[in-house]
Length: 241
Ligand code: UDP
Image (cartoon, rainbow, N blue to C red; front, side, top):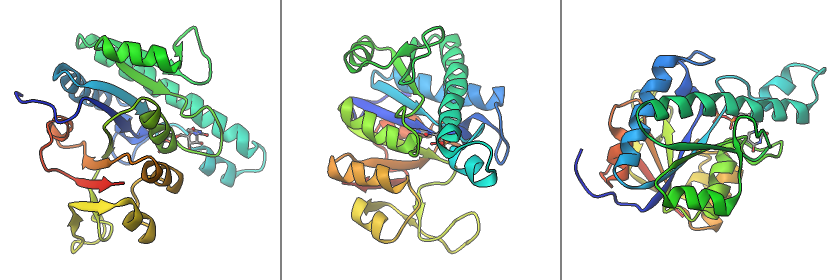
């Protein structure tokens, strides 16, 4: 692809579902390779790239704690955060294998496998063209990696959060169930909150709204879409703050 990136620095939020087969769980090497290929191409466009990885393909704290009364809710969330490290490690190797230099950083210290997240160090990696992969979310239970994306996005001064999903953007209804659902090309955070549209969790949306951080929701399943998003092509739904 040729073209000039529309953004200088971006944060890509990859949910756990990007690491497994549709409807599945765990790690699919094929899916990891696919997402790594797309992310590496974005980095080669010269845009500074931070990736926040989710962990829902392995474990969601909220779900686990609802389903049992043995593991405490906070513990379940910590388990979810450590799950994101598994995805981060997989993505790191896949991207490095493609010649893309990366650093895996965690907020919960795990120094045998990843660097601790230190803002100034993260910015230094970005300025050297390294992709930073951010795992363990915010490091605190009861929130999600979407909130971590909003928080780190603000902290790192990104131009936009790219929220990769399985559908083309935000629709008036669930497009996987309702064939009459229409895609919104543009929305505001207020509309998302008022209509309870499923984009990111409420904390994350609120944070983006307060901090004037736009979100682009797009389909990562279509090969080349992450690059298109970075090049400013009109895909998905643009949510302005
Ligand atoms: N989590 C948490 N704090 C954070 C980020 C994540 O407690 O800052 C836990 C939470 O239980 C969550 C799980 O980690 O369900 C996995 O993350 P998430 O559900 O955001 O993954 P995704 O939906 O993106 O796959």
